[in-house]
Image (cartoon, rainbow, N blue to C red):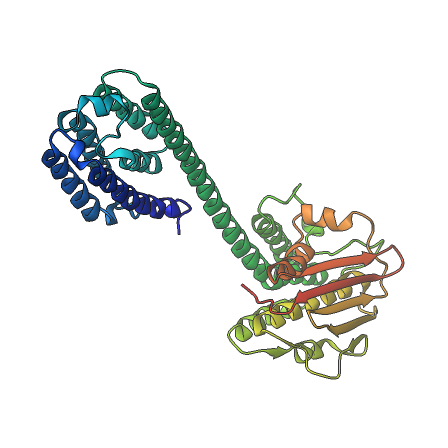
Length: 409
């Protein structure tokens, strides 16, 4: 619903209520009119017009400029007809015009439809008509004219501000949706294509010969693709030797061969489970357990929506990939699953060399997406969080938390 729609609904009610008020004033002063039948004829026209145009003021689409002009014409006709059907003494004493405060509804229609400028011009026209029927300036007339002018201009201005805010909000939501989709695609690319390109580069360099040239080309393509999916986060161009994805740099830590299959398998698992029922997170994390990875889990199933469970498991897999790459194949890791009433927390801890201060921010600026998208991005989309606790030489601990009810978008 548009932010201005309640104003149209209020205007509809205003027109009906002020019509009843105008009719009541006419009935009370019926005998005081010089030409009561003429005044009565106008009141019939005003009643029929209001009844037939109720739907016209129910929304901005139905309330056209042509209708607004016709509506204002009906109001001005009633104002200018008042001296013809009413006595001069009553008008001099401040008797209301035939449409009375119903006229303000015509002005407010212009205000809501076109903003404060339309309201100002329409109010000026109504002011001239009121002064003309009164035969000059009078204190009560000036007060009524100023009140209508101020109220209509204020409402028109508020409508313009509301429309601008609505457009800004709509644009922000579009940008947020596009950003989330871009990050989702970037995660999939990081977990599959980039991993494979990094593997080809390393294997080619190890084999040598023509394979080395293929590896060099794969490294260049990986750098170009990282630059594309990082959406301007890359602060500088990197050489092919810097291409492998890192969570943190270690002093002299080698980058062991990476099969690149883990990320792709995780992405497929997420897609396959997206439409299923609740999943037990333990079954998704169990394949990670091994001689160097210890999995500690509750004795009962840890149920999450399928998409959320798959994304959380993928984030854990990405964290373990970083352990293997940067702490070495001999590093040990521990996975702790905590099933809390309002959230599920998975902690991944390793005994590697730790993260130097500022390295995570540097990696994100360089377009290395392991932390920014494969881990932190996944948790953010689930409404959760990812936090790193590390010190050089003391290992790294990654805490991944997903609230109950979190679901992948």
